[in-house]
Length: 452
Image (cartoon, rainbow, N blue to C red):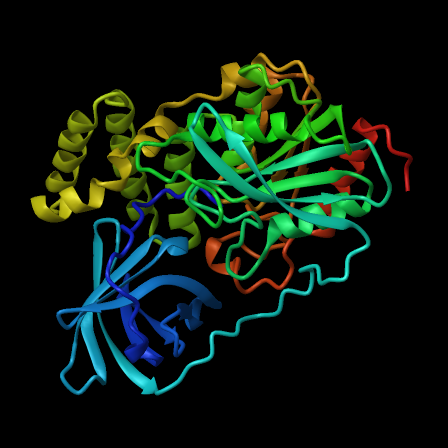
C-alpha cells in the first residue's frame, strides 16, 4: 500500500458489531476549526469513514467492535483510531479520536438506522470478459516456509511471453493492492497483459490465500517472496525465463532492487514512487509535508517534524534492540506530555520489527549496485515519497536509471489536486493514463515487443 509517517492504530481483536449499523455523525475540534466526521456501518458490520469538510469519503475502517459497552475502530489510511462508550439507548458514542499522541474528543450520534457504503465510482477497474487468460496460482517460498497465492494473467497464444511481477507497498495488501475501493494492481495487470506481457500479482503474507503474516517479518522477508515469485514464473512454459521484470510500488519499489541484489536476476525493474533514501528520512519529510498540507501553522509543522525526527533517530539507533527502542521513544513521548501508558501503546507499532528495519535501511547502496535497466516514476504531488527528495538521490547513485517525474500525480499515481492522502478515495481515476502509458511502453520496449 503506502508508507505512513504517523503511528498506526493497532488492529482490533473483538468481533464486528452489526448492531451499530447506520450512520453516525460527529464534530472534531482541530486547530480551532470544526471538522465533521461520519462513520457509516452497513448491516454486516463493515464500515467506512467520511470527512465531508476535507472532501474525503469511503475511507475503510477496521471494526467497529463493541466489547463491554466500549466501541473501537481504526482508520489505517489516515492513521487514526477511535474509542468510546456506547450510550444505554444506543443512540450515541462518547469518546475520542486519536492520531499518534493527539487525542480529540468527539461524540458520534446515530443519524440513520441503515447506511450505504457506496463511494465514488472506479471507472478504470477492469470488468470481465477479458481478452486474455487469468489463472489463480500458488507458489512456495521455501526460505520463508510459506505458500503464496496470486493471479497470473497470460496474453492470447502459446508464448513464451515476457512477464512482470507486481510488488505491493507497505501494509498487508491483497493481490490487487486494493485501497479505498481502487484496485491499482488489477489496472496495471490488465494494461500490461493487453500489451502482451504476462503478469503475476500475489497476496501479501497473511492476506487472502497467502501464508505468513507474523509480527517479526520485514521488507527483507518480503523480498524473498518476490524472489519466489520470480523463481515460480521461470518454471512456467508460457513464460520467457530471460524476460521477467519487477514492478514495485512504494515499499515494493524498495524491495525490487533487493531481489536483484540477492541474485534473483530480473530482466528489468520499475519503481513506482520507490524510496531512494532511508525510511527514517522518508517519514520525517512525510510528517512535514502532510502537516503542511493539513494547514497546520508553520511553528507546529516544525515542532512536529522535529519530534518525528527524534523518534526516527531513536528507532534507528536501536534497530536491533526493540526494548531499547521502546524505552527511548516512550521517553520522548513522555517528555511531550503523553502519559506513560499512552506512550507505550503509541510506540508499539514503531518498535516492531518491520518499522525498525524500514527506518534504518538505506536503499542507496542496493540501487548503486544494480546492473539491470531501471525506470523510476515519481508523482510531483506525492507527499509520501516526495519526488524532489528521492529522484536526485537515485540519479546520483544510479546515473543509468531512467527517471520520470509526472507533475500532477500523487503517491498512488492518480491525477491529484493537492496530493494529500485525504484525496485518494475521492478521485475516481485509479491510475493516470500518462503513468500507465509510460510504464507499459517502457516494459514493452525492454521486452522486445513491437510498438503500438
